[in-house]
Image (cartoon, rainbow, N blue to C red; front, side, top):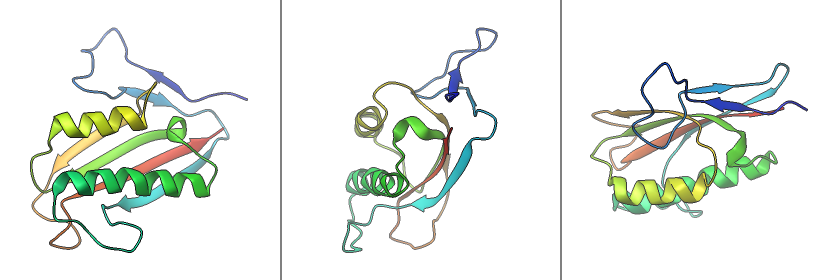
Length: 130
């Protein structure tokens, strides 16, 4: 079984955060695409605080992955969309708990609005299982 490979080429600048420039998926791997996950709790309540939404979003990603017998090592790409500045100290703490060893490729974008006015952050996940 081939595994997902992550590299940061020496011919380009190192990542400015906790991510990997290139993630290579083995041939014939099964691809999983999660809809953007938001910070609702299990009852569907969305907290007002940005960091509470971040925490819940990571919990929701974990739950979705577990339904397919996947974990953070299967994640190949993360797209993060936020409508207000991210508290990087808090976000990086949650990120490092979620990805304790290897980081996926990542894109972050600040946008003016998400699907509902009370949503402050949404995270899209691409995962692969070889």
